[in-house]
Each structure stands twice: as C-alpha cells, then as structure tokens.
Image 1: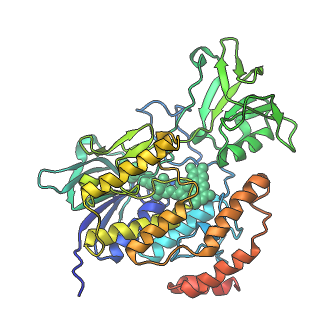
Image 2 (image 1 turned 120 degrees about the horizontal axis):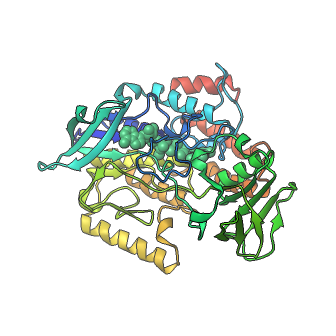
Length: 459
Ligand SMILES: Cc1cc2nc3c(=O)[nH]c(=O)nc-3n(C[C@H](O)[C@H](O)[C@H](O)COP(=O)(O)OP(=O)(O)OC[C@H]3O[C@@H](n4cnc5c(N)ncnc54)[C@H](O)[C@@H]3O)c2cc1C
C-alpha cells in the first residue's frame, strides 16, 4: 500500500527545468505553484531582441534580460537526443514549425509550450511573478516572497511551502574574462549574453574570447561582416596565430596577455593588434539572488554547494532542491530524471541517505575533483558522465536506464561537431540511430498527441 505524502511545493522558474519539475511533482500527487517572471513558459528559449543596457552585464542593478539566445541560433544537439524521454521532440506538420533535426530556437520554444499544454502545466504557473526572497521560516516551512512584475516592492506576497525546487536557469549572469589593463583600453566590450545579430560588428576588428559551442557559431557569423576576428582560447597553446580553415579573416590565438591604452591587445603568442571590440563568450555564473539559506548553500567559484548529486543540500534535504545545475549534458532528459527523483523523495516513496552520508559523498566527490586537478568552477561540468549520473538516479527511481541510441547519438554529435563545426547541423552519419530513436519513441509513447505526430511524420 502506498504511504506517499502530498506536499505543497514551490517551483521557481518555468523554463524546461521548471516545467519538468512541475510535471513530475504533480504526477506524484504534490500541489505545485510555479513562479515565473516572464509571461510565458520556455525560459532561455524565449528569444528577445532586447539586450541589457550594460553590455557586459556587470552592474547588479541593471534591468535583467533573461535569455542569451542570438537570432540565428539553432540547437547544438539533434532533437531526438535533446528530447524529454516521455515527450519526443518530433517534427510537427501543423503551423509554421521547423522540421529540421537541429531546429532554430523558435521550434524549441514551441516544443516546450506543447509539453506544458500536454501535461496541463500552464494552470500551475503564476506568470509575471518575480520571486524576490526564499527563506526557511521558524516553523520549518519555506517562505517564498513574490511580487507581480513591475509592481511596487511593498506589494509583495509571502507564502509558505513544504518544499522549494529552484529552476531559475544559469545562463543569464555573465562571467567576464580578466584582462590586465582593460580599464584603460579605449575599445568596446560586450558579453555574448547581449549578442543578437552580427551587424554592429560591421568592418570592426574583433577579439572573441572563448571556444564553446556558441563562441564557434558567433565567431563565424561575425566574420561575415567584420574586418578581422581574433579568437582567444585557453585551449590553444602558445604558438603562432593560425587561421581557421575555410576563412580568410578568423585567427586562433592563445589567451590575451594585456590590453593597452593605445587600443592594442597583445596575446601570449606575441601577436599584437589594434582592436575595436572584445566579445566575451566566456560563459555564465550560477546566481540565486533570492535564496537565503543563512550561508548553508553558497556559490564559491561557480560551485553551488554543498549539494548531494548536484541536487540536495544535505542539511536542508529534501525541502530545498535544484534542478538543472549540471552542464555539458543533454539537459531535458536530465531535468526529467532529477525531477522524478525529487518528487518521489518528497512523497516518501524514495529514500535519501542520512545528511551525514550525503555530506561524506559530497566530500568524496570534491576531493576526487581536486585530486584530478579539476578547478572548483567545473564542479557541475558533466563531460563524460551525464548518462551514468542519470542512470544512477533512474535506478533510485525505478525508471529505465538511458536508451543506447541516445548515448551513441550524443557522442556521434560531439564528434561530428568537432569535425564539421560549420555543417554538423545539416550533415551527419548517424541515420541508423535516428531510426532507432523513432522506433523507441513509438514503443514508449504514452501521449496520444505525440503518437499522432509520429504517424504524421511517417516514422
Ligand atoms: C546560447 C544557448 C544555447 C543553448 N543550446 C542548447 C541546445 O541546443 N540544446 C539544449 O538542450 N540546450 C541548450 N541550451 C541549454 C538551455 O539552457 C537548456 O536547454 C534549458 O533551456 C535550461 O532550462 P532551465 O529551466 O534550467 O533554465 P531557463 O530556461 O533559463 O529557465 C529559467 C526560468 O526561471 C525564471 N526565473 C529566473 N529567476 C526568477 C525569479 N526570481 N522569479 C521568477 N522566475 C524566475 C526565468 O524567467 C526563466 O523562465 C542552450 C543555452 C544557451 C544559453
């Protein structure tokens, strides 16, 4: 007989993580309120032309623009591998949908809206409602202070919940490269958070710092209008500048050494050039401005901790949890399994180790990172072990392990992206895995709407 207990749970954010959390919490029988600052679901995938007035995103009082998407963005994962497990991301024939395997950002937003509709999540969301503060009240309940966006500070509302699930995303608070001398350098600087289109870079000499997926996309896009693009990357060793194959105006360099008052930038390979704009594609910081745990959970050099399996702070578990902190993953299926775990633990169906055991596990994890020379700021980088992690949680939840095709497809895409950075979204060799994925979608599908979509697609 089930002894499951229903809890009152607040979810902060209605991006993909918040939607998955809401879906699985409700499925488990909890009552859920989702707080969302925007007027629709989708989080990061809600593209906007708006940018922040501070192009580097340093000013803490700046009006925040949540999304970091640029206009031309297409996914860097194929839709099959990106997909939530229980809601396949298949092309739709209806409306103005984008059927490509690596679709544009609008299509992902439409998929997330479909997901919310399919599982009736919209009715749980308080839109245009900003969470300003979350703290633990004296009675042990979690207090959530929110207010309508644009409303007065004093018009806030405080509500008590048994548990809070934090799903506020981590691609909005820019991380900036430290460049000696930059304060007196006369050029412009911008972070990729505020990059939308290449036109402002027309005829400019640009230094772009970074080498992750969006840095690769943006450097190529800017090169179509800029005079020169010089990429500074940690992964390039100290050697002569090399040209990016296929381009006559993109160079690769090791890191910047210094910015100078005369407008030049010098690199550690000895190369020096007068530069108009530095574009920081240097990633983001975890940021929880609303969360007051009295110092129990901290962000230290981009490590959010201490967290058991990137989800639960031991002394506050399971009443405070985080969905979606890891990166270098296929995010949606991971949000799904983390959410199922949290939901099952809150209801008492799944158990957690004691706080002491969780703390020991975290300490062992941190010391293994240290032994391997992994800096703290990479604590949530899951390169190479996302599926093992997901499957560990799946076992706790009694859910099936990751599909073999998904693992293979993720690796095949990574290799293809490296081999063909310009064309991997349109040229691939894992057709067999696509077929396997669709066979699997057909077998596993439980939602009528998606079944009919699959039939539409003749797969
Ligand atoms: C440039 C870029 C490209 C990417 N490409 C891919 C890709 O190809 N494939 C892929 O799978 N993933 C990609 N990602 C990762 C992407 O971030 C995830 O897919 C996913 O959308 C993250 O979801 P989330 O819910 O964690 O965060 P978000 O989508 O950021 O959602 C967080 C939500 O919380 C809300 N919120 C925040 N603070 C508050 C508050 N105080 N009160 C109320 N609401 C609040 C925000 O408004 C937002 O709606 C990309 C990310 C970026 C930045």
